[in-house]
Image (cartoon, rainbow, N blue to C red; front, side):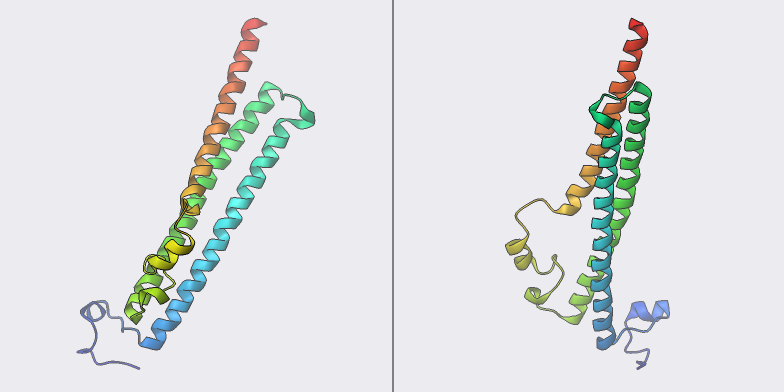
Length: 172
């Protein structure tokens, strides 16, 4: 249903876009909730794959319970460091999408006139969020920290193997 241009908000007149009616806003809210949920699934999948890959690298590092050769240790440590850095970037992008969808949800709920207690948005429904989730550190803050800690640990492992290699050369 097209509204007359005098009823359209100023931003809509300038952009050439028609304002959404109430039904379209509800539909868009459903889309935003679905997109946020899907991106959250991606986020946790990435997190799981990252830790599985790190576990595989650790097993490769200490095959048979023996300390690896210097070259194997350095290569696996470099791969672990690079994996952690790449994962951090991918995780940041996925987190950005989740935040973007949450912001859209918040704007749509405000536009639809939701009472705070009925809003899906944690930013609007502070009472519900605090009651059920607000006690600890949010996972979205811990996930990127995990990748950075892993990168630091793999980098330290590389330095240890490099040091051991040079110590071996000096003592030989």
